[in-house]
Image 1 (cartoon, rainbow, N blue to C red):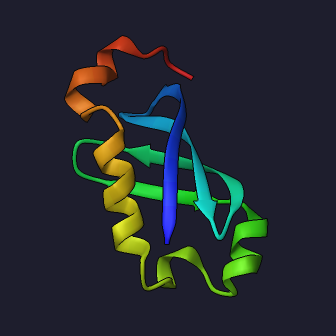
Image 2: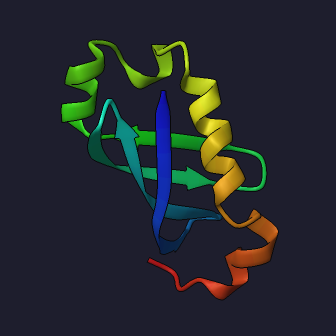
Length: 87
């Protein structure tokens, strides 16, 4: 089971938002980057988490639950995009 924390809104880039996200998995903390737009998203996780999982994050059975958990914690795209600085 994954737990997530929003650490920082890094900024906006090419129509999307970069967010630094902390992932807690099996009592260990891992840094990750989440990029989202109004209709797309991608998650990049640390190599140490990938090593622990033994598979690519996209292939983990809880991947969609993880994305939905992150989406439930970030600000809606349209509410925050204009407030962020470009990176």
